[in-house]
Each structure stands twice: as structure tokens, then as C-alpha cells.
Image (cartoon, rainbow, N blue to C red; front, side, top):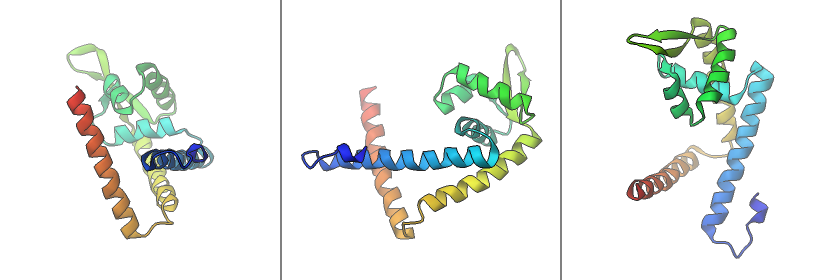
Length: 156
């Protein structure tokens, strides 16, 4: 993808393409490792990560919103994880149509193991940078994020 940026393109475009390329490379590595090590997928890992942050569980629409995917995608993944005993569904008091999804004890243990290895894969992906490089890159990307959010807020 980066090869498409020629010298006539502004530096911002070159940077955007570099960010996309790096993201795709790291994501491909993570997807491969999850599949090989845990026989799972990145969307399943992401769903479990959301539930790890919400011990009381989340409603399906909350999961969908947090993961930025359709409800159908969340339902399919949830069904698989329920069948494997990694998550369960709990009725929501006062709403017979809704339920919360939460990690089971087995799901919590499984996610903790995946998360430890995932962290190592990410650390390895950035191992070519010094601590100072990492801090600088984080700070600069934070400025990009803040600017983009401010533009989105003003457009709304």
C-alpha cells in the first residue's frame, strides 16, 4: 500500500499509508497467532475483551456498539462462545426481551491466558522502537486523535 504514495503526494498522505500498512501487518500477525495458539479469531478475542472490562456483563446492543459491528455479528460470536462455555447469558431484570452476556469463570481464565500472550505479541511488534520512540509516537498520535475528534464534534 505504501508503494502507491509517490513523491507528489503530501507527507500527510504518506504517513496515513504508513499507518495503515503497519496496522495491517500487526493485525495479520495477531490474527495468525490467535488462530494458531488458541484456535480463535480476533472478533472473538475482542468480544471477550469487552466483557472482561464489564464484570456484570453487557447487553447485546452495548456489545455491538462497543465493537462497532452489527448485532448479527455479535449474536453469532456470542452463540459460539456460549456453546464453548466461555460466556453465558443472564436475564435483565425488568426487561424480558433483553439479557446480558458475561464471561464465565472458564471464559475469564481463557481470556486472561490469551490477553497475556496478546500483550507479548504487541510488545514484540514495537520492539524496534525505544521507550522514548514509543512515548513520542503515542503523544503525536494522540494529537492526531484529538484533532480528528474535534473536527468530528464540530461537524455534528
